[in-house]
Image (cartoon, rainbow, N blue to C red; front, side, top):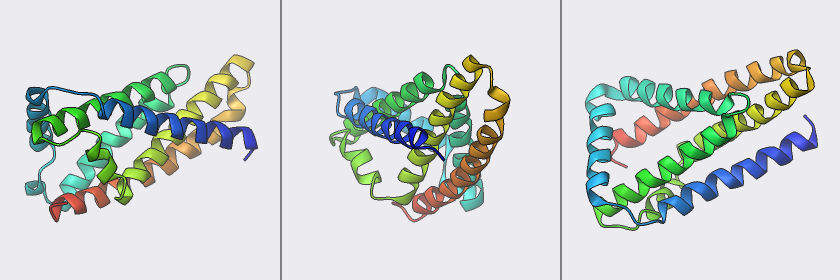
Length: 172
C-alpha cells in the first residue's frame, strides 16, 4: 500500500466526519425530524429481530457505499450522503429537542459509527484511485484492489449492521 493512498484516505475521512458534524449542527425543522423518525421506525424495528435488523442495516449501508465507490462520482456522492445524514441528525435532534450535533457525537462512542466511516472512506478512496486509473488507461491494474476493497467493506458493513442492530435491540 502506498503512502499516497493512505494520505487520500485520511483526507477523505476528515472530510466525511467534518461534513457530517457541520451539517448536523445546522438548524432544522422538527416536522422533518418527525418524518425521518417515522421512516426509520418503519424501516428498522426491533420487531424484525436481530437477524432481520442486522441484514437490513447492513444492506442499506452497503448499497450507499457502492455509490461511494463509483469512479468519477463516488466522492461527491459520498459527501452528499454524509451531508444528508448530518441533516437527518439535525432534524431528529430538532424533533427530540436536543442539538442535532449531539446525536452523532453520542454515536461516535459506539463501534458501528466508526466501522461505517472507515468503510465509506475506503470506498471513496477507491473511487478516487479507480477514476485516476481510468483516466491513465490502466484501470485493469486497479481492478483487483477495487474488488478487494468492495469485499472487505461488505464484510465490515455486515458486522457493523449486526452490531448496530444489537445496540438498537437493547435500547441504545
